Amino acid sequence: MENKEVLVDYAAKELRKKILDGTLKPGQKLCEREMIEELKVSRTPLREAYRVLQSEGLLKHIPQKGVVVADGLNEEEIIDMMYVLGVLLQEASRLAAINAADDELQQLLEVQETMETMEFDQDMANELDQKFHILVAKASHNSTILSYVKDIYGREKRILYAIGFRRERYVISIREHKEILSAIAMHEPDQAANCNKVHFAASLISNRKKIREFNESLNNK
Image (tube, rainbow, N blue to C red):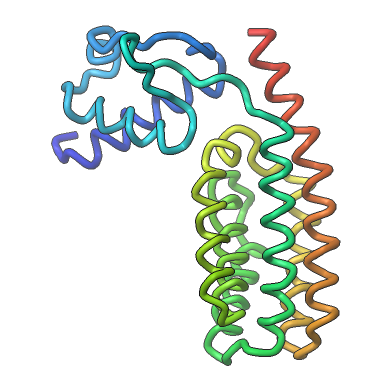
């Protein structure tokens, strides 16, 4: 692994795994020398990996102390953020049903078909789900909505890694996406908005449960 980007990606992946499985615990200070020896990378890619995980909310830098593992997920803060995301995408769906161009509908269809046909993989499921909703926001032709949606998804990185999709919820989500896309393609604004509202209401219930389970698992490790 000589390529710098590969080393950064490797170090970030290994550290992420240790944080999410509880090997590295909330509040624990990371010793740079120990991490270099354990991961067998030099200081530069390790520090860049730290920055990647800080952007995901998994690590934080505390002055006079150094890099430490972040605390558990803040349930109410996350639910509030996801509620706002749902409201934005509800309006994005309504506008997309009015404004979406043929090539934008085709892109949404391709993502939908990939989700329906691929073998379940949690990381890919997260990526495709996010891509679907960002494409809906793009198809709204409202640049402010698109900007805010992208910003919220950027903040959600840690949440996605921590709770992700479960297979049973993923299957239901695919069906809900299909209903959203159908309403957009049929140019039915109110139906598109309502389908998205139903989708995010179900997601909020599912994610609240998974956040609690994740925090409990950290406390028990």
